[in-house]
Image (cartoon, rainbow, N blue to C red; front, side):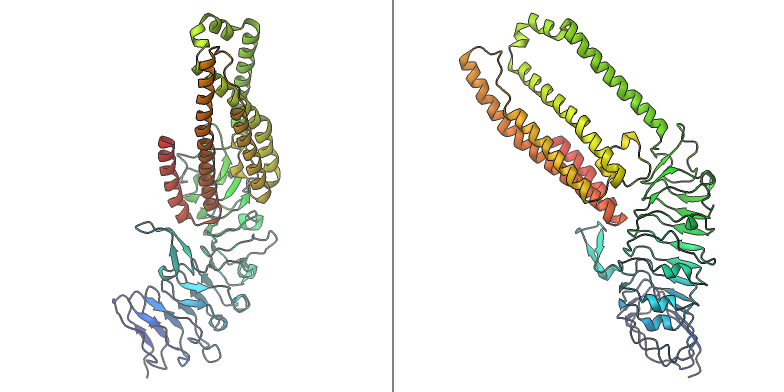
Amino acid sequence: SHLRYLSVSNNALTGTLPGIISTSLQHLQAHDNLISGTIPSLVDLTLLQVVLLQNNQLTGNLDYVFDPTTQFQVATIVLNNNQLTGMLPESLFQLKPQTFVGTSNCFEGPLPVSAICSNKNLVSFVIDGMSSAVSCRNKLFVGPLSAYTLEHAVDGSIPTCLFTLPNITTLHLSGNGFTSSIPGDILFSDTLIDLSLSHNALTGTIPAKLQHKKCSNIDLSYNRLSGTLSSGFASNESIELENNRLSGVIPAQFRTLASLSILGSNTFSCLYDQSDLPENDPDRLHYHCGSNSFDSLYYTWLGAVVCSAVFFMYLEWKHGIVRSVLSRDILLRDTNLYYTFTTICSVSLRCTLYAVVVLLPLYGLCSTRYGTQTYEYAYQVSGVYMSGVVPFALDWLFWWILLAGMWLMLRYTPSSPLIVNPVSTKSAYHSARQTMSILIPYLLIDCIVVAGVNAAYVYVAVYKSSTLLTIVQTLLSIFKIVWGKWA
């Protein structure tokens, strides 16, 4: 009855936790074992201060484990890496603990925001992947692949009051499917030095107050944050911003930071020699910059191509070089192969004009309103850098117009006027119809399959977890190899 400290950690213990051991118990430490079952009621342990039960196989909920009306000294509760279920009860935070860790369990949302934010004693609040334990995952593939979805992600927006708690130092909310944005006018607690919001679905920009805040760690990676980075971004010990939609200039102080990851999937500008990229970023060696200096090269190349095309057309019009060669080679001129290539060139030219005159301006106009990056560059004119229902609908509409136009051009292309033999003409006509009856469905199926696969990839890249994205990237590579070889 006088036992105050119970520590049985790291002993590979099995079975379940017993009921009341001692009413004088202050420290309960049974972490890193193989203990299963539910957590028994601890309400009679009125002197309880520390509960460390992480890295076990505990199940059940926490509804009747604690009682804030009789327990006034509970300071630390660590329950990560178990299989606990249910919502986090308000009574848990009415205990006024300083530390709560609940990562990698099967907890459900929503969070008891009022009770959490009323706890002014809270120093560390860590719930990374609070619904991601093994028992509450839905595997996407059979076999060794580890991609999965969550049965019940927390979702919703991040309670802004968490950022303002007067004593908070560590706030980890990663991997919970939080949406919305971080308000620009929010006030961050002076004590907050470790912030992790990665692997959510946060949008908007990174508030200037957060960029200028001195911290030991800021992790906002794997979200949908856009905008630019301030030149006054604090030189924190660890900064992770990769896999967002950031663009613009990289702050100069980032160049020599020891622990930094910001380049992946963002489109920052840099010098030609990339000497201003962060030296310790893991993506530095294979990063492709975006900048206006590269735009100038792109436009120069495009201008050279246009000038060459105009010059060639002038020579053809003035001197008839191609016609002259064909007129001397009657065998080449009168073949079906020549006529087939002529038809292909005609269709290709019209499709190219459609892409340049219609599709490129469409992407440019849509990107001004629906673009995902603040700074976009000439070589990035693509539907991939747009988000929303309107650009999706317009893209699909004009792509189907292109496909329909190709079909009409092939369908109503006349038979070769160069073939004068009626028998040959009839044979060529039937041959052309047979070819088109095979070619057109093939083109339609090919376009639909490729567009569908790429649309699925973009959906996964935007809305799903990084683990699933890695799997899909591998499958997409295999698809391109197989489809490109056999299709």
